[in-house]
Image 1 (cartoon, rainbow, N blue to C red):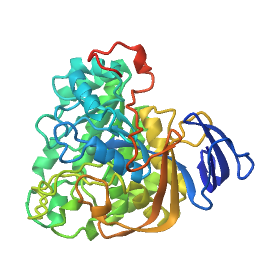
Image 2 (image 1 turned 30 degrees about the horizontal axis):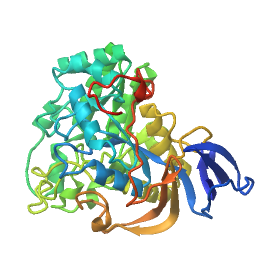
Image 3 (image 1 turned 90 degrees about the vertical axis):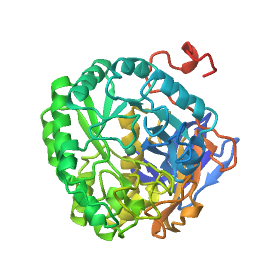
Amino acid sequence: MLLRSRRAVLPDGERPADVLVRDGRIERVAPHGTLDAPAGPVVDLGATALLPGLVDTHVHVNEPGRTEWEGFDSATRAAAAGGVTTLVDMPLNSVPPTTTPAGLAAKRRAAEGRVRVDTGFWGGAVPGNTAELEPLHRAGVFGFKGFLSPSGVEEFPHLEPADLEEALAELARLGALALVHAEDPAVLDAAPQRPGRRYRDFLASRPDGAETAAVARLLDAARRTGARVHVLHVSSAAVLPLLAAARADGVRVTAETCPHYLCLAAEEVPDGDTAFKCCPPIRDEANRDRLWAALAAGEFAAVVSDHSPCTADLKQRGSGDFAAAWGGVASLQLGLPAVWTEARRRGHTLADVVRWMSAGPAALAGLDAKGAIAPGRDADLVAFDPDAALRVDPAALHHRNPVTPYAGRTLTGAVRATWLRGRPVEPDGEPLGRLLDRPGTPGTPRAAGPDPEGRAR
Ligand SMILES: [Zn+2]
């Protein structure tokens, strides 16, 4: 296949290009109009942009166990429609959680043959599972997520300081990445708790200080153990100086933020609209500007969705009580147009968005075949019309539950087509996604390793 676009986003920037794809990989990238048509199809995108597929390393699929919240079929349909060609699934909200090799096997069984984009798995670090970390690591998880405050589900308890220290020491020994939800439980407990429909009350219940206290504690533990740590979903810009100082001091720390922190602000959240509830929360406009400045300065390794849906019921769509509602924003299908809308308004380019949402998260997860339009990489590609107006109709999304804070908004940019390893992802076509092991997993490719489950891998 030959793809031709006047706006191809390549590692060194945006320019007109021809992209030759063979056997699922990018074979050549050449100036626009210079490659001869191969035996296969030629797709001329004109002025529609050609991007590397997005890599979303923060997705809660919730299957098995809470498939009514989101499942592999619905999540990966939404991903493909939103230009995401690789996702890495979070270890909690499914039952069982991915905190043991059996939990990982259950995930793989649920996902096998049903994913429309390539899918990998994070493991989980919880109190008492330190002995499971090495077998999970050897089984191919990309790294391990832990919480410093209650996660919201009882089967995934948070790490007390001693648990964190123990987990990080083991992950440092394994050379595995630690992902951390950083809010401090003592600060949360001390904050005013006023349930109800007022967003301002919810915001006051999760102050900036909860993030800074937790990040400070995490950085101390990372410094002592030598573990490589990644701060998930940074909402408060107050943590940025802590991260910069630790980095300057040699601590191996990266951080991500999410489309909702970049595109939405507390001032515009309607009281009772629990679609906006997430933890940590969407903060004020001034904070949002500081997140953008940090993003522009290269302080974030990735912008990823933290797609964490639930049923409309648990989202308290009836009562609008922020305290009672499940915390999580559903945006897997909308991350690209949401971020592009705001990025463009602020003078950023498509190449910036690709760095934040494709190359960055691919590097974070060690996915060296993803994240760029370059020879040898997987031909995971997206045709994106950067000028289209996209009115968000929740009912038209592939998310299992049609609840999103972007409902009714008009975003800029629309995904026109998605290719996975050179093949178009069709909504009703056969699922083409593969289950990914962390590159470098002992025994990969999978066929070479013994399968404890006795099933074809
Ligand atoms: Zn999450």
